[in-house]
Image (cartoon, rainbow, N blue to C red; front, side):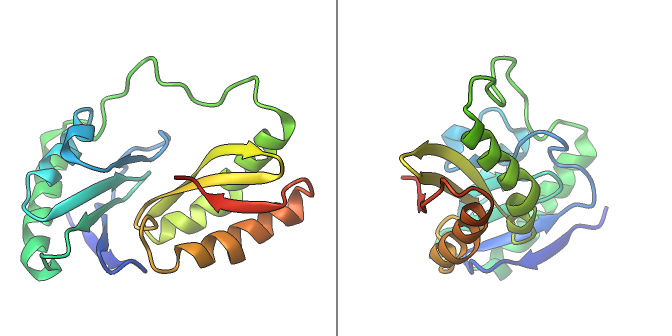
Length: 183
């Protein structure tokens, strides 16, 4: 197994591409701490490595964010070994819960349009940088989105939301007046 790595716009986050599905068609998952990773054997293995701050699992990639006091040259070999060991073990990256809800049928037309644009035009571009962007809320013309993975805490996150995402949503959905980062 050959695992490629890639720097991201966020210097504290590195993208790992194992050359196989990580989550496949399942939506990406963000783990902010070890306690949140109980449904992911892969995330648990990565959190066991000293210096891991958060883990993000995408369709075919993994991003790891490190704490400031560590550096990539000291962490990278252990991370690569943990990823390789996980995928050769045959364990799933994430154990899905049957109660997890995907799209709600009662979402209004504008919310469905926002989610469709996010899924088709925006999320694939954000995933190239090792992150994700998810819909949180729409209220009075304001769209609240959450940045995850390499995009969370990235120095260019505000520019991504305002210059990129906001312009696309406003162009296709006239009711959208502004995009804000959800807290």
